[in-house]
Image 1 (cartoon, helix red, strand yellow):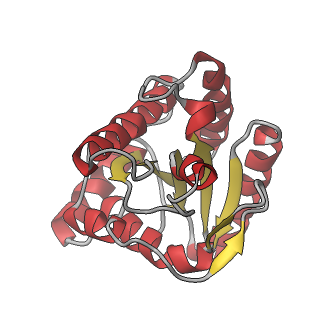
Image 2 (cartoon, rainbow, N blue to C red; image 1 turned 135 degrees about the horizontal axis):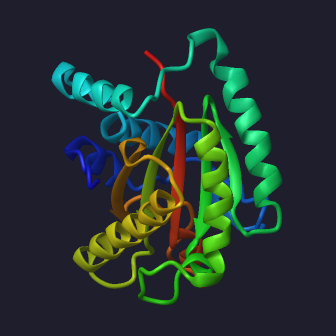
Length: 221
């Protein structure tokens, strides 16, 4: 299901140059999650949103209800995401995928070097078991919506990077769906080079920027 809202792409086009912090997994300097959170939130609000217009929201809610997926009660959201986060951290330990908590959302950062071959969008066979592990948790926590976002570095044309990021996000989403994650819960967007988390001036920074991120959001009403 390819859903690319215009407002999401606008949010994605913000090149974040705010506060810098050190990535705890690599030791490299990068844009802080607090700074990038606003852009992530804007994009997620548009594409998973459970959308901005009332008609789109109603369509999404009908589709979720048809798949037997209900909302999380407001007071239980924090605990619901806490338990899910703990299970993901356990399953993804040593996989190369980082797990970051951003308010009530969980961000899984899947570096491009462990997920794809260079300039390819097919998921590496050795990475498929990692996505299987993620899908096991997602199938248990059905009231979680998933934004699958593809990101590239700034090398090459913007047009090429937008296409590659979309294809990579779609490939990850297809793999998750193949493991039984309901497609109605998946929203796919290619951000291209527009949401870097590190400087594109260094090889290490470009490697960080080449990634697929899963943003997990609780479905609430």
